[in-house]
Amino acid sequence: MEIKNFDTKKTNTWCPGCFNFAILNSMKETLTNLVNQKKIKKENIVSVCGVSCAGKIFDYINVNGFLSLHGRVIASAIGINIGNPNLKIIGFSGDGETYSEGLNHLAQAARKNIDMTMIVHDNQAFALTTGQQTPTTEIGYRGKSNPSGTFDKPLNPISFALICGATFVARTTATNPKHMNKVFEEAIKHKGFAFVEVLQPCITFHNNMDYFRKNIYEIKLNDFDGAMKLALEWDYNLNGAKIPIGIFYKESRKTFVEQLPNKGPFYNIKRSTKINNLINEFK
Image (cartoon, rainbow, N blue to C red; front, side):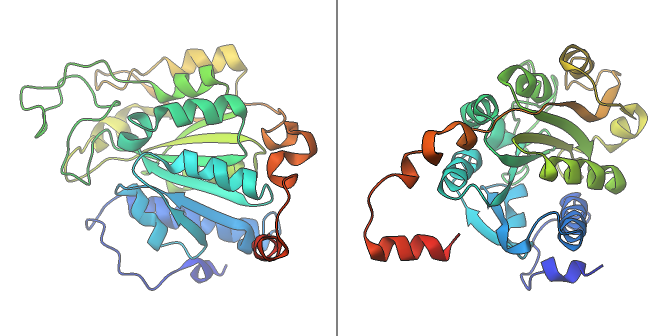
């Protein structure tokens, strides 16, 4: 298993012991398996990352990549998908940027069924900027931006993705690499918008590892109603509720590009020979 094929020479700047290391290693192992099994081609993989601790993974996986603005991972990925539908796009983003200014992009990508995999590293905190609350932070959390304690009701990304029409919805945890590998592989192989939430304790600013260990349990694939019922079991507060992980829902539906007439306007516009040659180099 040549995992080293996905290594880079960049110095890693994550905090020692950060669970992003587990996500990185799991993703590299998953990609290695898929390439070795000839399920995907290494040269067709594109990572799209934003500005967050999660976004630093851009430097640590040796694949084609695009580093976007904060909260604009999905928007950038949509453009890449329309430009070249043959690419295997994997987005990496934190819960802060994805569920704040990036939330509308998530909704539109899900309902349009953009062909990409979206990996959200959810530690329920803006860890890169030292622990401010995010839309999934539990009620009562005390951080630098809210010393009196958070009182906002947390967003439930799993139910949100289901309602918006994502054709693949899953949750896994960085504390269980084998489970991550399984979920990552199924998500990347999926044709359409695959949404994967990775529960990731931040040992520096939001260490909920003990709660996860006591309350996480694995589920099996469900229909939509069953998936929604499971999604609502945990409201992202640390109140003793059990946390289901696994693939909640999966369906087959035409992607956005597949529904475009003649592959869309991008392929119909008249371009100069020079521009066509440049485009063909990236196909």
